[in-house]
View 1 (tube, rainbow, N blue to C red):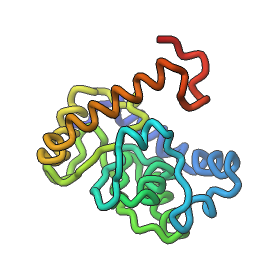
View 2: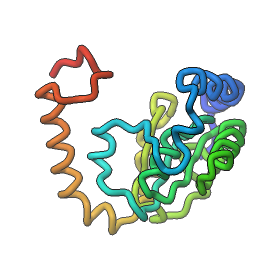
View 3: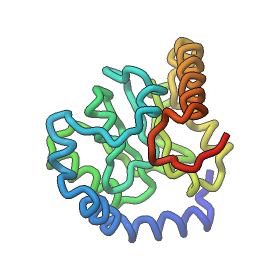
View 4: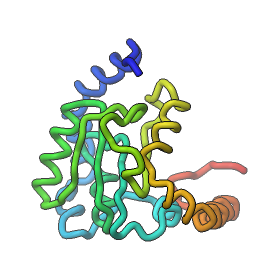
Length: 186
């Protein structure tokens, strides 16, 4: 898939913003580095962790890690073997430096989340996607994501994940959710 002009614009703008993005995250959480050190912190919601289940030992792909790599760091702290991807070189450079600074063994790769080239077929147990609003072709991204997730994991966990999704949906409906989602109506 050839990169479109829109994707180029998004990549270039996002690349220029990465340094500020990291600074804003550190300003919002002054203990940013200490929080993620020694396997302690996670910025994932209860619902995200419930949907994923136990990720210990799983190969997990974070498709849009950004410069702060908060989700990649969170999944690593939960025991996953993480590969963080972003479309911008500066995000990957910052994320790599952050992981090194706090002693996390995370692989970071400059990759478009829509194509995930050169991520191998059936190489990941789980895929985590954020910032999908920036993707130009969600259908292409979904096909690509299906390509890189192991078929065994898709088959073995379909019932299990569906049950967790139903429980999570029920929790949303009863109001037992993360308080950051105030005003949500079903």
